Image (cartoon, each protein chain N blue to C red):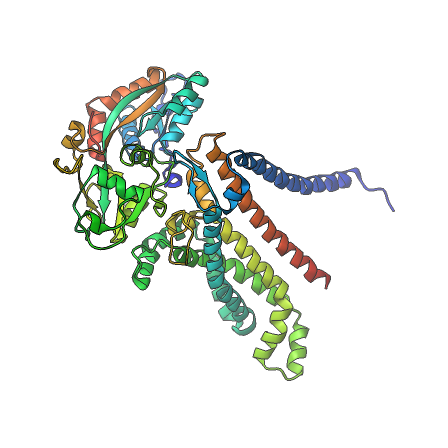
Length: 291
Length: 280
């Protein structure tokens, strides 16, 4: 073993420092959020805060109950997933397994352009175009509903789900498919029983990352969903998401007030959810690599 | 809206510094605060800078509270506020050694707007309050169709939200199912799409609009109903009116004093009228 050059060791050391720094930064962000957020428990007990539905932070008798916001975020996000998963995964299957290469070459960039549309533009589209259509189609007075947010969020996360699913499908070794055809399986049977199951860890990761993107999205839900802090009873109710609550209320809140701490706690919940989702995604990737 | 309105009016100076006059480049005058006043502020700044090309003024929004907090923290020269300072803010200013001084620069009325197809055309101030509090929930209780009222409010960081809450809702909470719009333009847009809607905006935003209907408001049932107008706002006949203010730390001095002087002068007040507010 030759002696490593000093410069080489410096580079190694630098790279590891950077890697560790990013872990440290994430830990510090959470610590900072929580250090501010937990102070809300001095104003009300956690049971009320997490399971009450009355969000009235600027009232004379303020209440900081977050369940309606949490449920609001989840309803919009899950609604978006219901739309985007079949479309995204279906697209990926079509582009990687069925479409002739020259068609895939045209379609793929078009889907990717979707990812580049600024969310404020999508939000504006939802407000001006989609909302009146929803109001007309479902006979509700206002189209600013969870459904509106879910539809437009689905458009936003479609490219994420499609791209990663397609990569996973393309990574399935050619030999798998050839073996399947050799056994007399049809094209469809090969897709269903060989390609998709083999790509499943990647597709799951695609779905989880799409979820993470959707639940953290702010501008679109702020503009599209009506922002009423009520417990939604369906997709045709307006909802107030956690992200839009922070975005629209943080501007004026007095530092060190209960409202300020409450918004940090909302941030903690959001962080915890997206952290859990990302953790799940990376565990699935790891398990896929081991097997 | 706040995000959208966080537009800095960049002082594009073609001549100022390029000239051979010498001297230190002029310091930029920072004006921040009320979203309602951003349009007005920008119009003033443009006019001011076209008259005095060596001056630089930047206008940002964020809400009256943001502006007042900035004046307390000393991070802005002038705060624009569409309401008066609250007790709590005055105390905070004292604690930090700041001395905010108010100058009234214009008057504004809050217009109550509904969908153009709504047959209701007048309400009392009290009825408006009850609707936004959620005590009146059906249009038929105020002479309209049998339809649930859809309430549209601004977000809590807006000065207009505070003004409504204090003066019309008498500090009660907005109805629980109120929808919140992140900006005035979004709110007008939403109301114009919803036949059951009621919302509130500064009158400037309703100028020349046919997609929403402005209601006449009376102080009480047996009094006259007035539309928000220059005369009715200044005379106090229109019940939902307010002053638009500048706050400076101490009496205005230097650049701030010159800018305020311009605003209170004929040129500045002309801009006030052009933007849809009422002169001092």
